[in-house]
Length: 385
Image: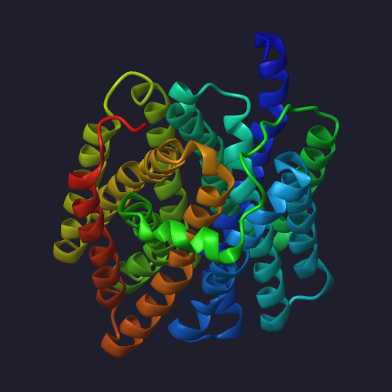
């Protein structure tokens, strides 16, 4: 690809990464829906679980679909589904309609996560893939941290936090149009399309299995912090939802800073060492959240989790993709299926929080995910392939 055509192709792809970030509105939306319908922790945490459940169901079929229709067309379908997901709450606002909306958001995001990362690998050279994936995560994180701010602004200015949905829907439509007008040359996968059995058989490889569970924990920590950060402030410091909601923005702000920094660092330094530093930050943060009740310290800990968790996904995903370069579609499908961790973690966190009548229950689940990432940090390779 010529340099000019690379940049032209990157613009709609990066806009699609921005739309990918819309899935993170589930954190702040869950807190508003919980308040609007007086839900228990377990019932409220069904919402983020509904989003990420579909990664288990559709990730591998999406990898197979890409073998048939190509990556760009799969991303286009995902953008259309996302637009419909954002339309649903505008037609009817109820707990049932929000479950439908979040299910569609999860389906659209599954299609996008599986297809967009390998599509980017058709534009960017392999040795720069980790830093390019990280830059994509940086763009995604901009949408993530803006969602709570837009919701709080809409609630304060117009008395309706749901104005978040039409704003994001318009962006989804624009991304669909721009990518639809862009031509991207896609490399063919070697061999014929894989079956379910062949895809899941890849989990028999230790590196792929390690990466898969690592992504489950990364996303579980991500969604868990997204949903729980405001609740910790409300429980310990009696803050209002509007004020506590900014904790979610703080988390994603530092995830954004981490992704932006990581895009440059990973292009020059060992991803193994960078991964270890990232996990160390999260260990310090989770200990701080167990021990301290000060607003400043809680904010620092939330920021450290955001910073530490920001580059876990692209490092693990790039290692897996480069480990089996002739199976990118299938590996991508499996790795994105690991986002199912975003279903398991909130459910466990909700159950344990209700059982203990404290957000300490949620923190225990988060700590378990961080402990596994410590294990992964010792197993990562300096170079793959």
